[in-house]
Length: 519
Image (cartoon, rainbow, N blue to C red):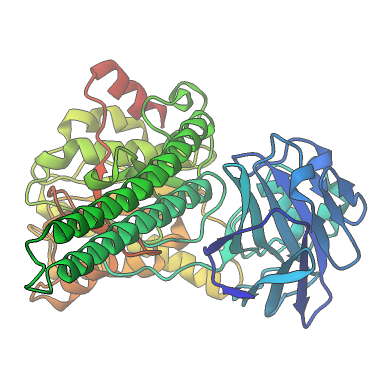
């Protein structure tokens, strides 16, 4: 039996799967049959004790049984859920296939969650795979169901779930990975569109690892066989040695060709999934060509930063996305703010689209006037004119710090409410023109900014090794986006290197204006 960690997946054999959970408190189990966007389509897709059976899925007293071949053909996944009336504590989820134990996943919720998506059974080509998810909802089963489009289909269950006011509506909590080093792409707790894109990225990473492993094995084997062919001086230059060398090269080429064919097949499947997803993703996560930019803004759980690729592994390009509000500030590495203006414009456009249900407030520090080409279009959401004089930086940052401190006091007194605004801070040209106290203010916002819904973007050269300890600490805490071609990022599942092309604001004036004003 495989012990899984959050985010890991394994292939399944296609037999009858049984999901069970164990915890110190009484639990109920349920299942959601979902499409590619992780949302249900009808009441038949919500399997609970009151409505226990649907095509290929059956809820029993303490288990969910899934027969993959019988699941409706247009469904992409089955989410396997556990819930309780109070804090879950440690939950051990297990899955067996044809009565043989396959996987176990231990989940330790930390924030009072009362509902968990433990596993996801999902299609991959003609087969099925199992993913350990561990995504928790402090608002209970009702919150989980609403987040997956099931609020209208399971009202009795949702009504029975407790309401927890110290978690923002729809905000999942639970098995998040800890952000890693600045040069590593780190998986985060995600949901819906963001989760789907990270799943595709993981599958791409594992396919790339298989290709690299096969290439390495083929090369190592070739070296060994060539060495053996010439090891005996008496036969080194004979026809037999020539034949051995030719056979070794042929085996190497066949192994490599098979690996590359498999990788091309996987990449083609993932490209189809990305194309389908792009048509339904909210604009903040979609490509500029997506129809989402012509539709009314829809909430998104993340924003797209760019595309990851590797030239030696084919043409597949994977969207690189992160959650919003930004739980870790973005730091765009550059000596020239003007050189990355299209990148900054793209980031702002996506951030403004991510939370259409909340008022957006934007603060911009632009000492060199690098962003004047588009800041005029942002006038409706600007807190004040972009700062171009260094003496105005401290008061603007202090207002944000004050707001965050008030929110922290409310939180500590039990009076916290979810942020009513999505605030965005763009601090360009850092640290030139900033006082040392300004770096301290930015560090304070790093710790408390989430309480006011703050997303921060810093623009400047990497200061991770700066002599100023506060500046260095701030730099190391951010997620760095390299702008120099050839700077690698390493995926967290296999450690393979990827290149990142950051998204750029479209150059065409009318499209640019439409995108920026849409926020």
